[in-house]
Image (tube, rainbow, N blue to C red):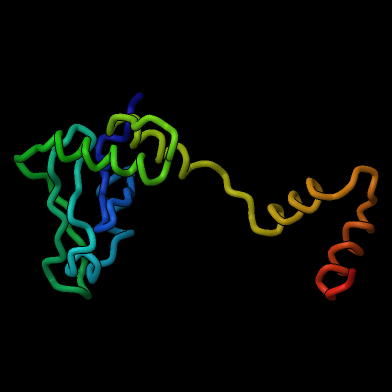
Length: 147
């Protein structure tokens, strides 16, 4: 289970987890104002190296992310376990490496647009044998307050 070499796990104040494939992705995504205000209290590499997340030029400047000499596996594992408890109820927590891989893979899945999701729901919820024009008429009736 190889991860990109500069994978970053960042936790916000609510212990939500964001995983980035590189330092560049992380610093381009995060806003300096949020970093300045302490929105992200913890950042780690998958091997539990503590990363320093700063906005040295203030809330309007760039975000910096640097490796430190510290590591804290216990805190990283606790935060990852809390993430799983909150967002994947009923699933056992995964270790930090597997969690990072899971989130990277999930985020790289092609996403359907809202129109194809709605169309899929309409097809799934309609009676069998109903024609495409019936789908349109049925949705028009519901939208117009009919029935």
